[in-house]
Image 1 (cartoon, protein in one colour):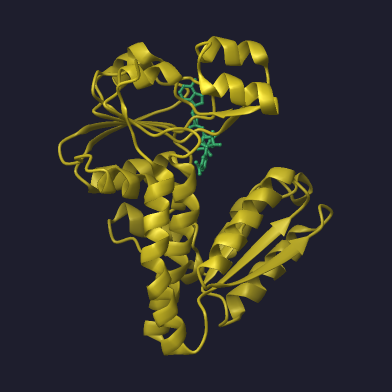
Image 2: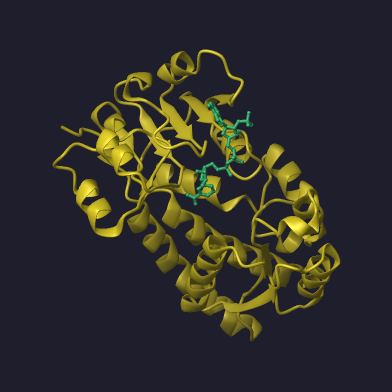
Length: 311
Ligand code: NAP
């Protein structure tokens, strides 16, 4: 008896891609070169290799130049910094992305140090202090791709922002914090929740818009959600235990059949039963995920256009 309107991230991501395609062609014709995306991938984390592969493929398909600098798991922090500096120094690259996580051997602060080294004009992940500061001041040019994608998905789905109570669960630099700022700039009244938040269900119950970016399977329960609220599920959790699948999905759910076939399922941070209460909901998969790559392409073009305009 699911009642929530499902917000189709795949369709919105495809629409964004089709809008970018002629702009990328026009850039290439005007400046005699393609917008360039350089990615640094260090180590052999299989999930990172898959993410990077789909980023390179999507960017290449839409007309960007793409290059990958691969470093072994044994690479030093200096080698990672040298790769970033090489991309900083080349005019062929408008966007630089360093895939997280970096190998543990580079040290606990390695990601911060490496991200801080990226030229802010090429920082298509929006992680550098300059770009975060610009976001705080509501004059951002390059914003973290996942929260930016959430805003695109909600705006293009006609979800009203001004005056809405928005609750963001999660305060990471990559998702939660930039998400909260983007909602604030659209005139939502924003509450940021985290692992020390007291009375989380009661806070969520007051929300017109809930964004769950926690990393815990099916964490947000149906009775936490105000009927008719918009619920955005950013979570990507791999479920491999049949008992969890049986607990989460009713016997006739196609998700159970998918699990029986593949032995694993991707489930979000929002319990599937929320679909019976929410007014609108992003599915997992097929909700926020596809937007992240679409916004990376968007940011790469924005960076290229700005760099070219500055000369
Ligand atoms: P993260 O850095 O681990 O942050 C998780 C946040 O959730 C933290 O702020 C943490 O609070 C909070 N949290 C953990 N347990 C909680 C609890 N019991 N109650 C309330 N808050 C709790 O994760 P992330 O990078 O933001 O990612 C979040 C999820 O989104 C993950 O599933 C990730 O895979 C997914 N993701 C998806 C995309 C996409 O493209 N769809 C992109 C990025 C991330 P503290 O700060 O107090 O520890």
